[in-house]
Length: 373
Image (cartoon, rainbow, N blue to C red):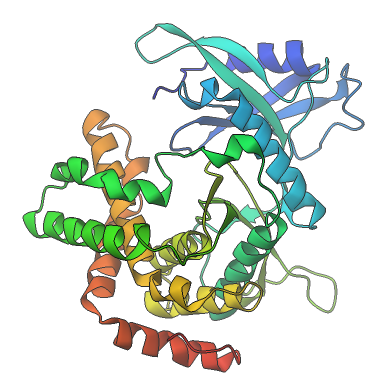
């Protein structure tokens, strides 16, 4: 999997030639697999498919070499985006090219200088902030859980043929094959922990026929959740952490047809890692779970394996991050979750389900939500 090496003139050329707009400013955004660049453009456009040039700018997105070859899945992603938008969930939508296409193929050099073909799209930039580095509160975590559930509800009947056999290396199901990579973890005790998680996940989750399935976003992390400050009674924006509201979601690149428990578990995993401003990680997870269950029902089999699924996402993240860092030591973004995440995983895995569920049930009780069994 390779990413392109882009110069400013490459971006300016493609945006002008394909989308009929002149770039005035551009800024690279953090990304794991792809290249994302925020571009601002002049007010004029020669693209008849653009009714009004966005004053907030656009995200110029270039997929990696692997995903660039999956054009049929790009169409599926766009279908999912439309489903979510129809459910009145704010999300970034693709901009049509001058000739009406939702994406184009362009050749760019990779880091070794070899020219490869990459799939390029342009999305309207959604005004707001991501959840990244925001102070988490119980209410904010509850809203995150609600957003995850609303997405799953919006995608409940979305099942195109191209999604049936589609998977991603970030699909939680792939944890079953993670064992061959665990040696990239340096610490022996941590390697053993990862192997224990993989074993329990394979036994309790992958061999479980009672789990509910559907199309899921698959990567609701803090960088993919959009928040805005709420207005106060006098119409000004609030300056207190508790007044952030979750309004939307970004990036459907990890969309899969999978277990619904994967969605909530992945979301809980990231919120637990990022809860670092006074809200205990386990409490953060409990409030996210409460928000999800207030909108979308899970059965007993689903909730019974939440612990294994959360641990599996953390194990997956740490392993893939360590592997990528060994390949490319300059890429520190891939280690972002590890420092705060390892203590969360160790604590979570050391707790019995009775103790863990008892903790979360106290939180669910505050929302009048049925206890986990």
